[in-house]
Image 1 (cartoon, rainbow, N blue to C red):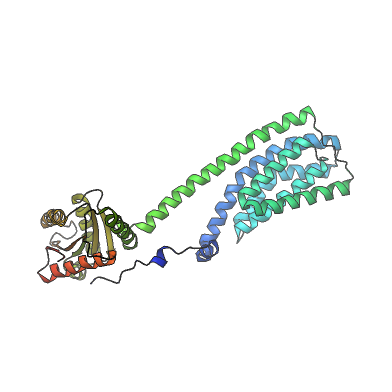
Image 2: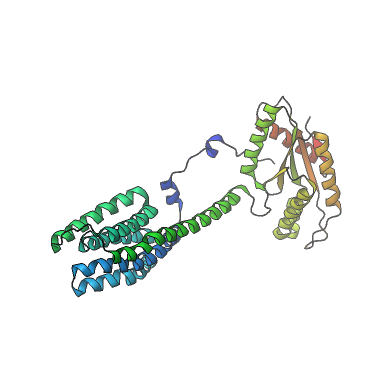
Length: 371
């Protein structure tokens, strides 16, 4: 009846590398992740390039470039952000496509730095924006690659155009650049904050999925056994009382075979509900799969555990399932108080399982305590 214990130290302490995690993702999951990544980059790029149009244009006036450069500036500032998003959105690998677009941003930024003659304030604002985007997308590794690309592009542009670096700025460039320097970090921080909120919520949902049973909402077996191990160690150190219960729905297979699995599911949910209504908030309920449940009652002697189960028996005696009023739910319970004789928490769990066998052999619909 009681399946092999799943708790294993190596299993719970196993480290999963990023490469293993990404390998485990399906193709659709990886694609959706890439789309979300490209969407996070989209807003900072839209705002940043549009805002940089004005300080770059102010610096280029002094260099009097040809009309083609002005067309390139307009396209880069106002068309390229939308094009980069469409390329990523339509790509089979959106993340890699977006990384290439960020490197393209670094190349074009280097070109503008060269054409501006390394004008101090526009160059500083442009470098800040590109550096924040690269670091936010790929950390120091991508930032280093982008810095090299930008520097090379700037040096090549200076060499090909013959523009001499001036390292100065005018009052007009100051006023055109200040909004970028002040507002772009705010926009970037806001996007990062929204991402952090979504990640925290996603983490919370994953934690619930990894620790809770999907049907009943109580702890799943794996997590319940972790809680049992912790409770055992805490009680052994503090010499405190505790009891565990193993609960089985009587004749559950007959209910499933006679009334169908939908009624069986309703029976499982109904028993869970009665346990939650009767037991204390601090009692830890777990579902072991099928029709088996387990409960950790901290600071509780066997007598109190038996009393609690008596109330559950009484509740179930008058309970009817809306979908099958003829079904009468009964449970068998094995109780094992913690004693010094248990050298391992698994021995404690086994004692409760033996008590459950005793209850079933004695006629079911009863509670028995481990000898």
